[in-house]
Every structure is written in C-alpha cells, then in structure tokens.
Length: 239
Image (cartoon, rainbow, N blue to C red; front, top):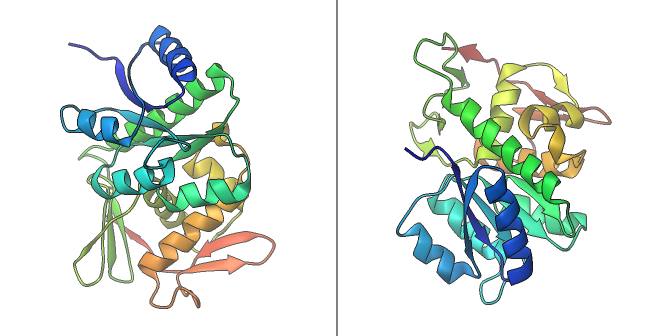
C-alpha cells in the first residue's frame, strides 16, 4: 500500500516544475506535473490527489480561474505559486478559495514546509472521532459538524465552505465573546508557516459574513473590534 502524499502540480515552466517535483519526491511525495488547466482536468478525471499546487500565470485559463473552478467541485487543499507578491494578488486568490501562498522565487524547503503545514491541518480535521465530546457547535440555529465538516443553516440547508472558512469559523466558535487578534486567528487557522498576512483574515471574515449574516454590511455575529480584531458574539453550544 502506498502511503506517500500525492501532489498535483500545475506549472508551465518546465524547469521550475522539474525542480519542485524532484525535491518533493525526494521528501516522500509522489508528484504529477502538468502544464495547464486542461491537463489538470484530465488528471482529476482519472485519479485523486492529496494536495494541488497551482501556478497563477498559466497559458490559457489562468490560475485564479482554475482555483475558483476547482474549489466549487473539490475539497482538495490548494497552494498557489505566484510571481506577484502584492497584497491584491493574494487577496484575489483567497477569494477564490486558496489555502496558502508562496511567492516566486521561493526556497524549496519553504514550499515543503507549506505543503506539510496544510496537510497537517487536513489530517487534524480527520482525527476528530465519534468518541469526541465536542463534535460540533450550534449558534443561532446554525449547526457546525466537525466530523463531516459541514455547516447547516437555520433553514436546514448545507452551506458550502472552503477549508480556510471552516477553520476560521471553528476558531471563532471555540472562543465566543472573546476578542481575537488577527495574529491569533492566523495562528489558529493557517499556522506559523503562513506568515503575518493579516489581510487574509479580513478577507475570510468578509466571506464568512456573506454566508452567515443577514446583513453582511451591518454584521451582528462576527463583530469588528477596532484596532484589536474580531469577536464572535453569538451564544455557542457544543455537541
């Protein structure tokens, strides 16, 4: 039985692709390298992967469009490779549902650390078993199931969440009526390898408000505490 991590790498620069593939394979992973979205789709139709590493600047369909499309049909963790370190590029990627970023040029060891961090979070989600007394949360008619990683509205409708959105909601439900700084939320949801990219939390909060709040522009559940962070104001019960 093969226990190696399976990676789908979408990178049109053959030299970078080969270097990354060789490094990850030397560190216990199986890498499938493709050059564009069409080739990625062909692979997805035949096999499953543990993580997707996606370059933004691709021929044909660009990486952001691919990321958004994949996120609507797959729960696979996504790490984006980008040559543009500007905040606007990163924020756009977060809005498309990416889990993490690394900016070119990058050290292969840093990429490996990012991959392992994302996979650790994914593995931790699966370790919550049926014997756990804290299998989920309820607030204002909403239900959050940690086992199935599902969020159900008061109208009994499943609400789609990216991995990052679910992890942020989990952190907020764990700490109701407590102000959490952006750094604390980054640590709870992304881990130390992601760096202090505070705007990523703002984007995730905005996305959660769109899904949870009756009026996202005038939120009553996830409150902004000026110069401090965010507060989850809803009464939360566990079970």
